[in-house]
Length: 393
Image 1 (cartoon, one colour):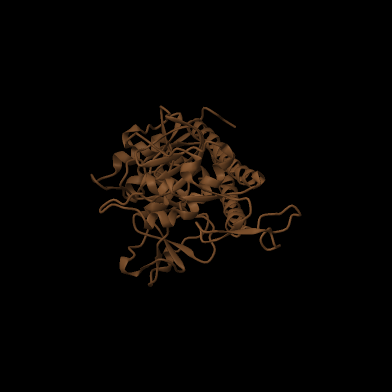
Image 2 (cartoon, rainbow, N blue to C red):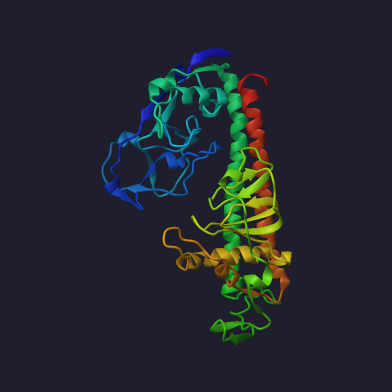
């Protein structure tokens, strides 16, 4: 292991000060901002919410797949040192915005090793010490260059980087599979529970093939014979979480659901089962989870009395969430009422096999999510030991 400065391993290119009056909802160039770099140090580039740009800018701030980026500013302690690789995208390119730097590795460092080196406790502590500001912390390239690190030879770097990045790739692959499974579940729901073209006894689409329908005055449309109209209140007792934001813990054993999109952790569970979680305010997200967990105030917890309705409950609520948001009340903070949730209408099929198929998809998603948690734990356990030489190749 050799002690050197980060300035011997990398250089940093600053982003460009794009003007907000030229921001767009779509376009050919998407801005890379602090929002794209995770605060939870999961090494991922977040491309869920993008802002595009519609005016001229220097061409040297256009990024390509695999470029490594690093925050130069943090509003939440712990962001400095979190780096991410630019992902592959179709139809547009990413451009480097101000407050984010592009990391250019030197010839004597492996870029994947560098990615994880920046996230070590030793480096992040030094970055925090060198940052300036109170509400918003900033760090200059020169202060980053001055950070002292211990690094092995280049072949060892490549092995360490390869091991950690292979775990990251598996996590990413599982996320892609889950996105596909989620899309499949939504498509099946649309075909089977909205269009009623579920497979009949001959494997043909029911409604298209002339399956018997009956008019429902309550819904104002035809539904398959034998299907039942149900409401959420018929399937479960809707409960709410009781805890506040301070209930979350860093290394808690149990999942803790708030109104945010991320699942955090806590030490004490209050619920157990196959649960649908609906954020009663904020971004009104809908999640599903099996196991022991706890929930924040304003988070609705729906555990169906009969497990067979689990996936149907989840997908049906997601299908009407936009309407629930439109009907939300509150002058300052909008929220969904428990009455709104209880009155959501669902159609229960005569054939339970349709429900089972939806459940299979949701359970597979949860299996891969659980695997990702274990992979992330393995990565985080290996990271410090590989970096300080406790584990050697």
